[in-house]
Length: 613
Image (cartoon, rainbow, N blue to C red; front, top):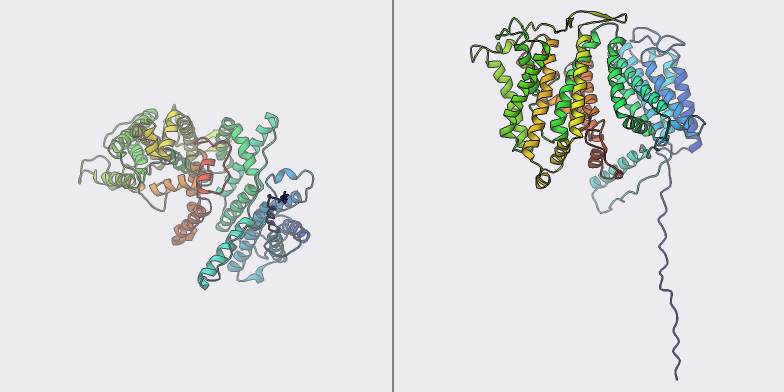
């Protein structure tokens, strides 16, 4: 008998060793303790330098010759320097500062240090160019230059988890290898500025949350008032640098995300507070100069919000939307009692609003009914043609080429100011000791109209018809298969957007005194026009409520402030838009759905935001 001996074998294969995580290192080879010391010391030195003299002569705008008190661009460097110091203290874990960086301090430090460096060195270069060289710098200018440079060097040495990069193929040619290395370097650089996910805001008493929201709105009003009131070109460019990079630093710190959580929790209160803050803007001005810009921004923003229904919610590319603004303006001008109006009719304002909105609504239905069966580029071409047809028609109805309705290229001039219940919008009025001028009167009127438009947008966006718009925008074929009447839904969006633009046009006619065809172009250097309106929606964030308002404000304010650039104004503005769309294609304020569409690697949220939230 043979005994068979079996050898037991271990059938379990040895576990493969886990890959060793990449060592966290910085872009610059400095020890962590040295880097953090540079950041804190450089930030503190930056703050101190703002109280020194940067130049010996007051010929440079802002008077940077004073010791002990900042002036002009020094205030902006001071703010970013303080932000850097606070974030640095938070990175050390100092008690009372940890709440400043709920998403981590390192990425926020990099952007705040970059903001200080960019603003300070822009000032140094501007002084050198205007006054004839760096010899015109006082010791304070040299100190701020060195301090901000050391701070930036320290932040670039902060460690971060490097991404796994694909190795270069040695068989590739030199150009391909260079492109590959450049792509790897750019990916590493982007990761170095990445931040973590912000912590959820812990529950606070309602009174405290409301107080925080009030502080946020007051801060926003203060920043807008400062930006719109910048007195000279260098100060405004510095403001753009400081505000842009400072906002990025606050975003990377997680404070913006936490503020968004609070405002979303008290959305109705936040909207009401925002309108109250906007209503306080004329009282912060000493004259009517900037109220003029404010009322035009509100007109532009109201029309952009109406276009957001068409483009952002329903997904219909309308390139002739400014024509509906023109229809409302011309309709109101014809019944305003203007001496140049061929009709010779003077209706009260409420009736003129109905006429303007009704005329735009009718034109919206007449244009939309035969064209909304088209999709995509074909619909865009048709709407572009409608915009041009409207302008040419208004040009030719002058009594020579056609019937005498609009006075042709001369337009309807001498439109009288509004008078509602005895309140003359063309006169100055005194409110609580403050003198309110003509444009401030129209500012308050447009604010009321804006409130109505926002209410319509919110109600329609969260309604059944609003969800149908979003379904059509995402996939029209699937929406039709689910039983949605696509043509009817799109026609409602087109008509509603047109009527809202017509309401804004009724006020625009009285603000500008004159309505001419040249005001309603497809594209031009002065908004509103169709190209700027579409850019405001895309730039601010399609489908959101506050996005087009922010986009419209920026697109009107920045070109108005960049007039000193002359022929290069549109070039600089276009480059800025290209960069913004490259690095934030979802817009300045975007809902979570759009963020996932443009950033495939983003984590899926637990719940998607509502359209228009």
